[in-house]
Length: 161
Image 1 (spheres, rainbow, N blue to C red):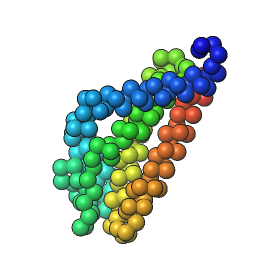
Image 2: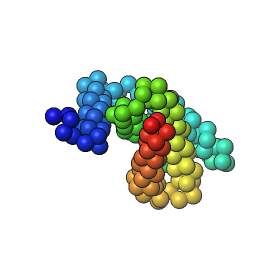
Image 3: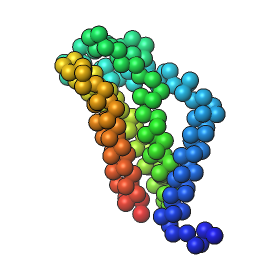
């Protein structure tokens, strides 16, 4: 049957299977309950970057505190889900294992750095426009992250040919 499927369909099925597998593992092993150290590190790094721009945020555990607002860095804020998208794409794409290793070795740290920048930016903007937090967090940065993963994945795929 596989010989009747186009390469695009095969890739799509492999990508979906990877996403499904990672999602099942995330749920089965309750991975969200084991990300506390990552959450605290991301909160600390984000506050550090925010302070480089003159910000006044502070960190307590996995919370970024900006004036009276508390930004909790929970498991959803770690960037783990965008990393799962990228990893699934790279594993599903027909490339050599060395190309995949290079893509993962560059892509994951880059996504994590963008995530720290995302939180630092949100913390800085909240100092001036706290009412903009929800919109920027839920829509603007989600869109930026999605585009970043998509462009990165496509750029990697073109380089790995």
